[in-house]
Length: 239
Image (tube, rainbow, N blue to C red):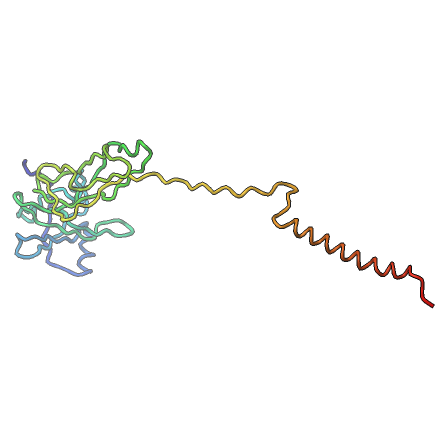
């Protein structure tokens, strides 16, 4: 597979500091640095902001291989990191990494789930745990994305990185067989427990008869007390 690169021109910069960076940006350029094991030391350069953004406007985005032309010197690079102004979203700084056509590089690739999981058809919920994976590949073999078919996943099932078929020339160097996607059972709504049926109208509560009986007994006693004085009042007085 032949290596295709997107051209990007750059200038060597000798200045440093915030003042120099401001002047560089005012001229439409962005301070940048090229790192890599094949360089004696990091190379300080300045690149055109618009050209840099246009160069990575490909499906591979940051994984686009660039052919950096630095004052007659050709360097193959990948965009490693960049800084944006939080308000204007303009490029503030760019880091490139030097790569070689015959040496693998470590890059992050988006994971795209395809198909409809069997568990979802049966009411389950599909969750994507990982949205990108770190892989090793030759610059020419860096994939745009890695598609993962989740059709066989049932409720309670999960898909791990070791089960993913990777593109040719791409490897994952990880000691952990991490999870990519799972299908969980749907949440079951809890039904409130039925409230105990209310007592039927007119039914006496437990122990009510005994209390009623006590009350009647009390009435009888009260009646006895009232009857005695009345009888006494009718008895003839002794002379």
